Length: 284
Image (cartoon, rainbow, N blue to C red):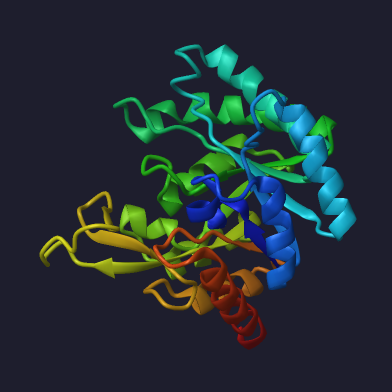
C-alpha cells in the first residue's frame, strides 16, 4: 500500500488562502507522501476548472507525484439547483476533469437524503451511480461512493448500494474515521466492506460520549449525539491499525490517503500522521 495526502488535509492553510492546491503538491512531496489526492478543483479567479486541472497535472508530473484520486461532492437524489439531470451531467464533467488530472479513481457522494428511508431510494441511487460509472469506465476512470454525509454512511447501506449498482467499475471509498459519525465501529465496518474497496482514507478522531458534557469548540456531534474532533492519525480513538489489517485480509493493495481535519498545524500533523501510518502498514 502507498500513502497519499488529500489536499483537504491542508485545510487550515488552503482555505485561508495561505497556500493553493498547486502548493499542496510540493508540500506533500516534501513531507514524503507517495501521491496526492485532490478534493475539488479550487481554480483561481479567471481560470476554469479544466485549465487549473491541467496546471495541477503538469506540476504533479514535474514532481513525480501521482494523482491517487479526485474527490468531489454530489447529491444524486436532490440534484444540483434542484435538478437531478443537471447534477448527473455535472458529475460526468467532473469525470472529464479527473481525466485531465490523470486520476484513475474518483469519489462522488451519493446523497444526504430527503426524509425517505434508505431502502426506498436505493433503486434510484443505484441506477444513477450505474449511469455515472458506465460513463467513467469509457474514460478509464473507476468510481466510488464514500461512507460520508450521515445518510449513506453505515456499512450495511454501503454494501446494499455496492450490490445494487453491480458493476465492475464501481466500488467503495472506505474512510476509517467516518463510520464513527454514524456511531459504527470502524473495524467491524472495514471487516465487512474491505473486499469492495477501491480506495481508502486514513482519518482519526478524538471521541467523547454523549453522556459527558459538551467539550466545546472543535467538536461536532455524531448521528446519535456523541462528540468527535479531528485528530492526527494515530493520536485519536479510531482503530487505524485494525482497519489496515482488514484491508490486508481482503488483499487490498491500493492507496491509503490521509484526510486530516484536526486543529493542529497542518504540516506537523501530516508528518506525524504519515510516519504513524507507514509504521502501521508494516505492522499489519
